[in-house]
Length: 412
Ligand SMILES: Nc1ncnc2c1ncn2[C@@H]1O[C@H](COP(=O)(O)OP(=O)(O)OP(=O)(O)O)[C@@H](O)[C@H]1O
Ligand SMILES: [Mg+2]
Image (cartoon, rainbow, N blue to C red; front, side, top):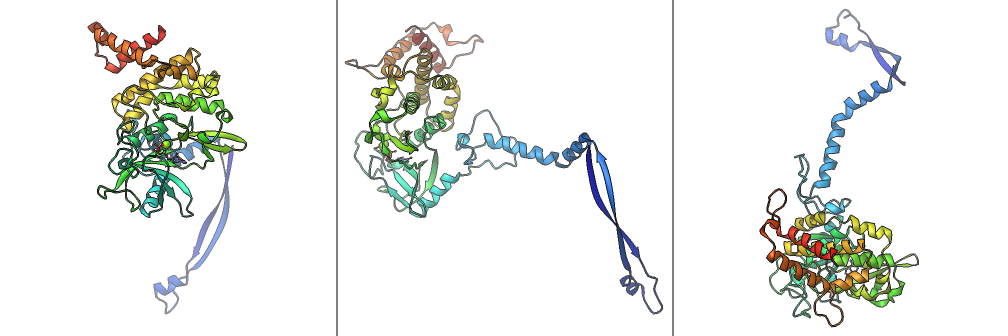
């Protein structure tokens, strides 16, 4: 039972009749105001009370709910909604037209745009790319910007140290963002987004002075890179997580400088950076620094096995498609992730899986490349009906490839 008590103010107005010599206006000014207050006590059942509240607020609650739902599927760059920033999730259309759907930049992007616009950035001396550290008002680094036209091999690269980059220039920003999206903070890839149309006099502009676009990544305060430490100090869990990420994106450049080391209390934690050379359009030999670290030979924990088992390759492909990664590179991810999932389920170690992906000993081709050749031959000679599913629809080439690839793995 709900008790409601409220006071009611009842005005009692005592008017005065016009006296001799007064007109009606003068008379109204002489009205005497009086009032009394009555306290009313009302008793309500819970149901009636809730019904009243619902009818008062229902509309607003409903609209708020709708807006929250729409934020989840919009390309809004809300800093708290990292997984959906800068890409539109397919199959989820926004229905509320009131909701702002144009690109809204998140905190990091806004700060990066401000810093770049006011020339608060410095070129990183290390490395081969045009990589800039972004500075805040206290001159502290808070972000890392990599303009697309300053990648190794690109027209405005300030260092010109590499004649032949591992992959052609131009796709680095997408691959940096892709690694962050696929990782979803598991291995700790720092927040990474696109940043478009920014200008600064600090940039290297050998060819024109156009605004630049690229990737912006959160700067992590670290104590060095893994090259400065003995690998035995690192947590097995961290090594396994980076290994899993590298296999999923077939990282061609996981050298020891691309694993940063952060101190957390007395523990050294690993931060994977620099995914410019990942997701190649065809299977090729990767570089995995961790492959010969002792942790790679230890079995995966049950939690890690579960994480791998939960990876949804179709969802990952969607994520990559939505940020413009080409279909060939998506196929690379599908192949390596399929292998990873199957091998982890069979109880293989990170080292054993990496050995299937990298040519070992005198071999020029890896086990994975051999399997791909087998599948490619099978596809050439498959009877026509295998190209159609049970419903008689033509199967997408990639699906057929993966199906046959799974059979080849199962026969190992
Ligand atoms: N998110 C980050 N937080 C802290 N430091 C970073 C971060 N990203 C990059 N760095 C530093 O900047 C250096 C260059 O960055 P990165 O390796 O991404 O660029 P690059 O120019 O492509 O170099 P590379 O020669 O390795 O290809 C790194 O070695 C590291 O010291
Ligand atoms: Mg690097």
